[in-house]
Length: 351
Image (cartoon, rainbow, N blue to C red; front, side):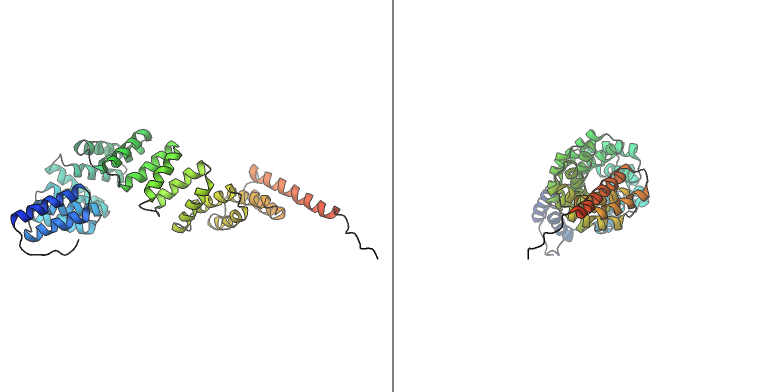
């Protein structure tokens, strides 16, 4: 938020600024709302409405280091303010000071049992503590008190996910996004629910929407990779896997999906190179050794395929896929050798 002009304002001017500030809050224009409320506070430092407006703006912007001292300042002015305690609890929760957040939020609820933010906070804290039945009840209460708040529905959806009530969870994430289409957390969780339900085309559509605003998000890219692999859409999978490798260069998941995209597109040389990195990351994975042997087989590098298949069999003598690759590569290696031996001698030129 910017430094503001500190000239004296008339009451009418202050109220015009207040009206504009609340319009910005309603539109989730957090920066503009905070700047407008700050103009009022510069005129009247104890203006409760403006202080809460700044707090809400800081919450929306995710500036919890600034929100915490502001909440304490409001509490110095208004010691029995449930809203200030709720904002303090939210800042403490986001700063991972869970015990302090729980105490502050409980105090807020003692002062005002109908405060939506406190119930949102409580459900979030209970989710962090893996108290899922309690979190579901708290999120339900939050949604009843503030059905327009995306966070309430998102918390309820998370609680339902943990009970494997996937269809209900998906409906809650949809409600959350109806409240705030830009609420990225709900887009992420919606993707998780769709993946679990096996609705992979919708996962891809959800990922496209999310990646428009955060193109490097690993969680969304991972969901997209799972969906594209399931649908055998290897062109798209390769693009997503390459981006995942950029973001997480030591990720077995990213390299495996890049390898699978290469194999799916018949790019066996590229797949073989990907295996080198995969086996650096996970050298005891019998499946990767077997896939590498099969890839070498497809490249007609039979001797190497036999050697790699033997490495795979060393991990598990009874692993049938590795034994099959070994047998067929060995067979082709000998056939190739026999063909070389049976090749006719070159015709000598006549004198």
